[in-house]
Figure (cartoon, rainbow, N blue to C red):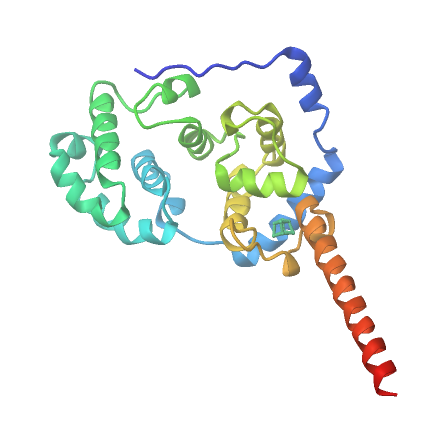
Length: 262
Ligand code: SF4
């Protein structure tokens, strides 16, 4: 049984945080630039082409704490071997572990898949509500949102550490430690993907996080968002400040060098 998390935030604090939200115009600019980048740069994956809840759920469980390239190698083989939740429920945990071993965290993932398959075997198909989805083993806010967007065309954000990194760098940092409890980030993410093609808007941010605004060494110099990015502009200021200091040091050196050699 999942325990509900505490939401210990006062109404005043919530109002204060929500006051920090960017304007509609800023959000529009961000979304437009990102979509322009995404059109020629997007990544294609088997699970993105699918509307099969089974494939999507399995892929998302695999994608937690690992790279998409590792999942690409395993997902096809896995869904061929276990073609349904029933097939997973009927398998032993060891059998599942062996198939997904190269992914890492294979014990935990195998147990999650097995528990989920057994829970689904007791009911007909996936629940349609967020509450129902999140009550299942292995399905948290992120996977529930993916399922709601892909299967029901809801406008929900795929808010994970990668999306939050891009949003926080561009618009400013969150206040709460847990992404799921931060009203600023939750509302901001929802506003950013609140468009007709919510799916592409989500993938655009996730692909951008993986290829440009990476965890370490983001490619700010060539970033299409640099002009208005809070983090990128701060880093640029530090770089130009450093360059200025270096230039002054060189000038000082030249002055001393020239004056002692003339
Ligand atoms: S300028 Fe840098 S920090 Fe800002 S969004 Fe682009 S890559 Fe990320």
